[in-house]
Length: 120
Image 1 (cartoon, rainbow, N blue to C red):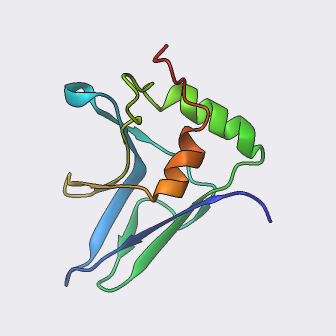
Image 2 (cartoon, helix red, strand yellow):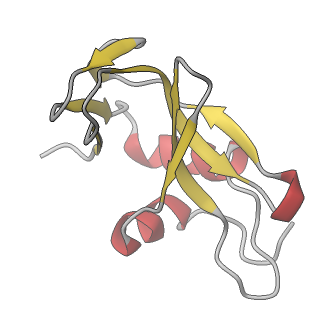
Image 3 (cartoon, rainbow, N blue to C red):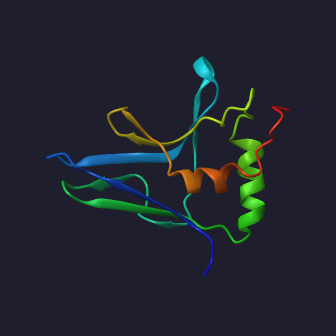
């Protein structure tokens, strides 16, 4: 079994939603930024998600450990004072809305295992 990250976006509304990007919201306090993520499989972006429908995206790079190291260096802001890095999944819509979601604890641990613990 190959390591991969599966991202599912559900439309619980009554109207279709147009998704334009999937990525990450990272940073400290007022300097948080949104960074896009290239998907290796799943729905093509932009896409239309009907009511009660799920859009599924996959991040499954060939070199998983290499991708995790690059993710920690390029995307994650190092934590300070023993705090966990701020990391949220971000989905952008065609209306300019950004929906942020927390990650399950086990996923957060795997994604942040290469983050610098001393804030450098």
